[in-house]
Length: 179
Image (cartoon, rainbow, N blue to C red; front, side):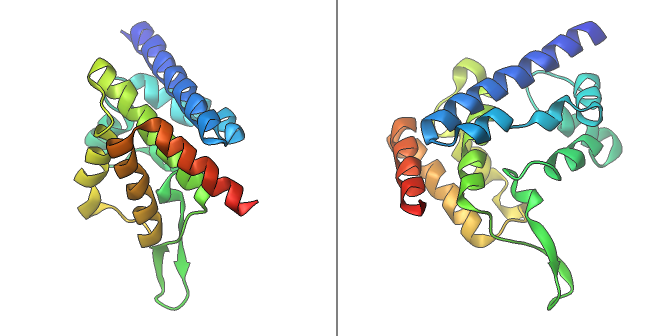
C-alpha cells in the first residue's frame, strides 16, 4: 500500500504540475508554471501526501479529518503565493489578521492551479463549470480579500461561459497592459 501511495501521489503531483505549466504557458506566465508547487517535494509536504493519498482528493483533506489541521497544507500555503491563504497579514488598525489583495500574476496562477486540480480529481468527467462550482461551494467559509475573490470568480465564470482559450487570451491581454 505504501508503495502504491508513493507512486500514486508522485504521479498526481507531477500530472498536476504538468497541467499547471501548460496553462501558465498559455496564460503568458511560464515562470509561474515552472516553479509551481515545488514545495510539494519537501519532506514536510511529500511524506503526508503519500501517507494520506487517496487519489480522488487532496491528501491534506484526510490529514485534516484525522488531526483537525494539516501541517502539510500550512507549510504549502505559507510558501506558495498563488494561494489566497498566503495573502493575510496583521492589520494594525483592527489588530486582527485579515486578507490582503493578491497581485494579478498570482491570481492568474491560482486560476491555472484550480483548473488543473479540477481536471486531475475529476479525470474524464471534467467540464469547464467544475472549477467555478468548487469555488462557489466554499464561498461562505472563505477568508479572501474581496477584489481578489471577484477577479478569480470573473475568470472562472469566463471559463465556464467561453472556455479556456478565451480566458488565456484575456489574461495575456491583462499582462500586456501592465508592461
